[in-house]
Length: 387
Image (cartoon, rainbow, N blue to C red; front, top):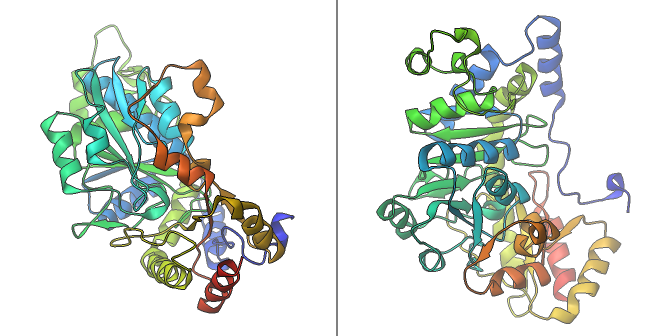
C-alpha cells in the first residue's frame, strides 16, 4: 500500500501552515542559517521544558547517541562494556560499537519494554562503564532501584528518550534522572525539527564535552574555562581540538521549527496518553497483552502484542485491508541482538532474551498521533478482537 493511501498512517503531517509561515519569515529576514542564536534559544527552551540545566542541539537522535557514548569514553576510558537493551533503535547499539565499547544485551520487562534492574545486575562486572536505558515507545522504563544501582557501581546512566518526550518518573520528566539523555526530533516523533536531536544533562562537564563533540572537538565551542584548559602555545586557539569530535551541528532552521513545535508539545502528549488508555481498554485482554506500565507514559505509538502466534498473518492482513500502517517487531524492529551487523562485531548476551524475542515475534505497533479519534481506535480494536 502506498504511504499516502493509509487512512491511519504512523504519523499525520505534523508541520502546520503556521510552522511554515514562521520558517518562511525567518528565511526572508536573516542571513544566518548555521548553528547560532536560534539554536541557543531552542536549547534554553528545551532545558526549561524538560527540567535540566543544559542541552546541546544536534543533527539527529542518533547523533545524540554517538555523543553520549563518546562522553563515556572520555570519562571512563577507551575500552569496556556498556549494557544495552535489545528493544530500542540500532544507534543505541551501533554507537557503543563504533566508540570502541562492547555492547552487553540484557532482557527487558514486557510491561515497560525496558531493561530491568535484576537483569542489569547479572551483567555488571569490573569492565562495565555505563547503562543505556531506552524508554521504548514512550513507556517510563525507570525505577528508583535502577538509578540507585547505577550510582552504587559508579556507572554512567544514559537515558534514550527519543520516543518518550514528556514521559514522567517520580514527578519529573524522563531524561532528567540519568547522567545524560538523548531525544530525537525526527519527523515522526512527538515534536519535530524534521531531522534533529538533543543531548540534555545537569552536569557541566558532560555539557562541555557534548558541545565540543558536536563541533569537531573544537574548544571554541565550549566555555572560556574549557578553552583555557586545553590551550597550547603552539596551537591556534581558534583551531584547538580537545576531543575527537564530529560535525553533528544543527541549523537555525531546525531550531526555529523546534521553537514553534514545543508550544503545543504538552497538549499533544495529553492526547497521546488518552489514545493509549482507549486502546488498551478496548483490546481483548484474552487475546492481546494490555498490562503495560502506563503510569507516566507519553506513548509515541500504540503497541499490539498477541498471545496466539498463529494470528500474526491475519492481524497484518486486517490492518492492511483497513489502511492502518504498522511496524512489525515494535520499537526498532524488535530484538537488536538478532540483527546481521552483530555477526561481524563483538557483543555479549547476559542471560536469555526471551521477552525481547516474544516482542519481536508477536508484536507490532501502529501510529499514535493527536488527530486520531476515539471512534477510530475503538473500531479498530473491535476488528482486532474478532480476528
